[in-house]
Image 1 (tube, rainbow, N blue to C red):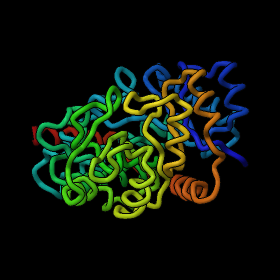
Image 2 (cartoon, rainbow, N blue to C red; image 1 turned 60 degrees about the vertical axis):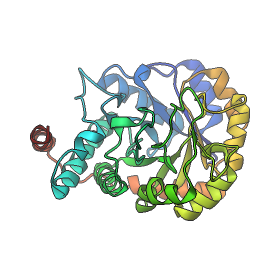
Image 3 (tube, rainbow, N blue to C red; image 1 turned 120 degrees about the vertical axis):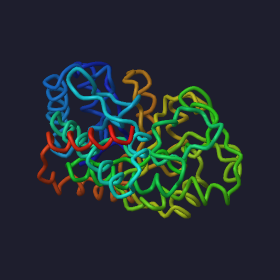
Length: 337
């Protein structure tokens, strides 16, 4: 089966005839849902079922950003509010902290799996520093790489327990950025040694995870001209080299304003740098057409990595009591607060 090396968004809560025709020809590797695509559990399940019926793959990757806190695509009144990463990091006892973080992610997986979503863009492995932009802020588990790595692993394993693939982000680290890459291009001036010691450390610790998302951030010590997403040297020497990551690397959203050039040029640059899959989120047909024209078919190492990731879904969900789990998470966070 030939697939385009893309993950794309949809315009609204139903699959339109134009989208169905376009996606049938494009055959993207996966899809991503946002709040504009979410109304109720029945509606989301109907949408994911429609995408799978169109595609023909039961393991079709359907993603969402379901972190908790400010980044949560499925929310009240149909789904609970989930805590921020920082809330989990505030639990004093390290053993309890990791156990509750894993349980919180397992609850998210339970919610997502119930409506046909099998990939969550979690955990956030960025390590904020004083003075950095709050685009990461309380999404991070803490300010120490050891805590971020520990709780990032707990969250990733909680998702996997529920049959949902985690996406580690934003490699090789967005925590130092002084700008929001949705709007501007951040430039980080830290030395290679500082980056190795703090920013890269959580990603090295979770290099066994199946999926990763890049940072639209320039690291002056690594490549002063290009953000990680479009930098061959950062991809080769840092993500694949120093960090040792051999999972599937997707770009962050190609429509974000941190990237320069047309949508087609951005896509071409991301693939030339070494991204396995391009991510385009806003569901605009004109932009998807431009991105698709510059996307390769999934093959070689990218296909190997994609297949290896999907094999992790096939292991299925472990037995789970969501009522008991939710009570334990809420009790632990109440004590920490």
